[in-house]
View 1 (cartoon, rainbow over the protein chains, first blue to last red):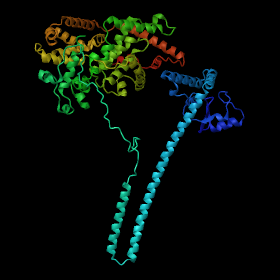
View 2 (view 1 turned 120 degrees about the vertical axis):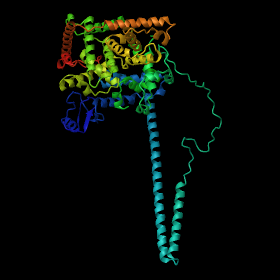
View 3 (view 1 turned 90 degrees about the vertical axis):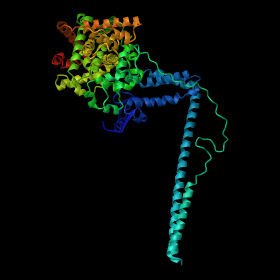
Length: 294
Length: 344
């Protein structure tokens, strides 16, 4: 078979490349080569996923969810919603793996008939939500565009101003009676003035009327004190383990009790790493005593 | 942690404890709330026997038809073979290069023992399981050996080593699963060190406790070949080792228990401890290497059963058993056998 682009049919999961698809329909017969399912040309889609089974399931799921589009708020209880979802999954599973196809299809049709208005309503809701999202996106884009234009214009204006200034200087040098040094000084002065003006403009923040959290400016905010939540203070209690054995001396007591005389002293290298001979000693004694009285 | 430090020190456990040291402030690594105490310590030897019998029976009941009844191993034969393969495992670990620390050996033996508590030798050949136990133990105990280094210790051709490695890797997950993912094993070696330190510090009656070290270590090595690890806490086994050594040398140690351990007033605990120590000592004394003839007979049967199973599996071409993690045993393709281990 020739190489990509690969398309595959929805009804049967065997897939082939575009040229083979064309070849198949040129011959006039609408049957798949490998499994004799009657195919329609319109049902060929470009394969998105590597595994054709997944693609098939995705397509089936889209179709099923078009009909079964209830949401959580449509159900009085969480369990009801979960049961509904389980039902949907079963249907998708059955259709994907070709189990009880007839029965499942009948079930779907019946559901469709019974819940026609709910389906319509949810469809409308869905489109409305999508529209709202799109509007928001559009607004954002417009905003962005405007800001971009604004900055462009500003830059243009600055450039123009600078050029005008230069030109003015040249004109003056040409026509004026004043000495050149004085003219240059004047020009420099004017240039710096212009720059400060530009700086001021940049710093001139556009007045907004809304905080980032969404609260309007100037809106009176309640200054009442936040109610105190009384909670029980945490009191530290050291953990207590039952070691099923005799009591183990504390780590800091080991030196005093003489244990450390019988352990290899830590070399400088060990100590640099944070190791002390007490640690190993404590661990060994702990292990010796743990579980002794079991 | 510098590598040289681990190799140069004689007292390996002193340094080793550095690695685990801060964990002593958390409960999880101590014996008294370990998984070993909760799940892998049993009351009586009879409980162990019962489990092994059940494993044996379970295999018999779901063995494929067509195999003659007499071809199966019974409980006694399984025990003989188990002891034989434990010895093999010990030998393998003892000649292992680089030198395997005692805790790694102890852990490997414990894994082997635990695995065959719930599984029959007829289902999984001990030759592979034993190597898998050693391999896993190296990993768990942070004794870093690469897998090629590991199989390099088998006296084999490189091709056979490669095959052995493949098998080990296949069985690793099964082993972990059958250990119920309880991989931390508490061995009695560190408790022994602890006792020696404690004796030197608090028990002046004994002039030089170091004299007890050799015999105690020897006792512990022998105890690792028994079921003691599955029945008693490691600290108790270590204490038994110490007292045993002392008794042999004619040294009196009762005062250690009554005074230092504070058991003077607690007759009950004291007698319980003595009782357990007696049981441990008898377990260790009762151990003997299995007889060669019995081993050979058992091995023959084992090989035949495994060969039979392999052909059965091959016959059922493409049959996947979803309950078993392990893939089918490729016994017929193995070239390395026990005899190769004989050369160790």
